[in-house]
Amino acid sequence: MGDSKPVQSKSNRFGWILSGTVVAIAVAVLLVTQLPHGGSAGGGPSASPAPPLSEHEVATDQGIVSFDIENGVFVVRLTASGLTTELGRTSTVVQGSSGFAMVCGPADGPDSHRYVFGFLDAGRAIEYTGPSAAGQGTGDGAFLFALLPGPVGTQQSLTVAPPKGAGGGSVGFPGDAFAQAIASGVRQSSGCYILD
Image (cartoon, rainbow, N blue to C red):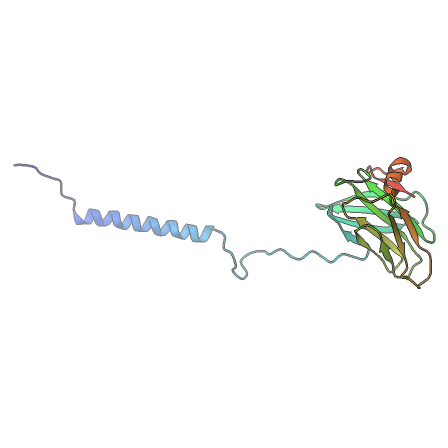
């Protein structure tokens, strides 16, 4: 008899090929149905645009700062990550043209958050001059400006006033208003200080 090799039948090889093909198709179907797809219309939830801010809200690097007069005192709040925190409220009743400086953190530097806010006679347009800031005045006379990071020189001033020639009161702050707020202002429960 000599060397004899086992002979595989053609049907046995065909079974292995068929099984391998079925497994490959099953893996492909799983990958196609389970992996995320990009760019398909109606293919899942999409991010909705943020609602527009009201005239009493300002977008800052910390979140949305809201400001308003409640029961005669000015109140400033911060909303960030779904949580709203009261940053401060004035201890004096707002009357006529009133202005306040508030600082959260050090008076200057990258960790400083500085605000000027208050009230001018209602119905007037409001203009701010001073270091770069995000903010606005409202139709009812309230205003808030959040200073952008950066130094404020002691010789620099911050002013909120009606447009030139419109008449009416204005409020101004010296460049060291934020250091004064820490030294002699009213400490808030948030840890901020208000100079009023």
